[in-house]
Image 1: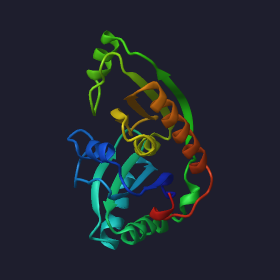
Image 2: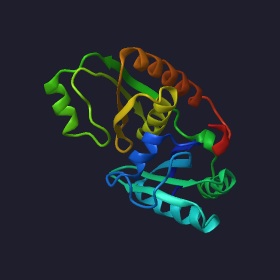
Image 3: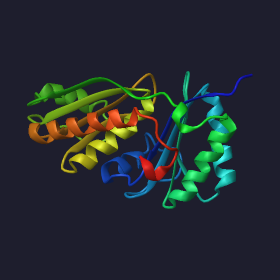
Image 4: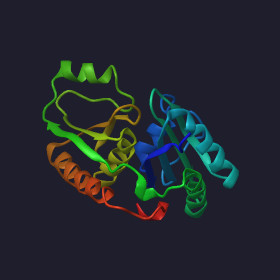
Length: 217
């Protein structure tokens, strides 16, 4: 058998408040709760079941890091680990990369599939979104930023970067697993326009090769 394929290696330092709360909620959370300001590392690989080996390697290398999310879906496996110690997180990440016989530059670069701002959401539209949301409520009359990216785990970057750009926005939904990642963010049209610009610029930066360090995201 060949080694599993690295799809995403995504360090996110300084988790923002709403995104950290989302990661701590029952739906995405499967393990230990990350808090605001924590440093995270997100991994996506294929085939999916090999993510169990990734977690084993990370915890045996650095027993102090905490796993927050672990998912094995149809094609891909996804893992989030976090720690206040960026060096410990780096060492755990390196242990996984070494076993894969690769480095972070081998990951699939993100591709932004869709981005739009819908102004003045109608009441019935808000109801439809709220019935399937995983985070905060969307209210009628608010504007909504929607973004979609592949691979799916880059949705974590979208959510954290959007909140960092404009903390006054509200994270309505975030999807990190499947064929693509998605975020729904509500706010004023002006704030959402600035958010969209900042996140799109950040995605372009992620598309370039970078060192595998939680401090260089």
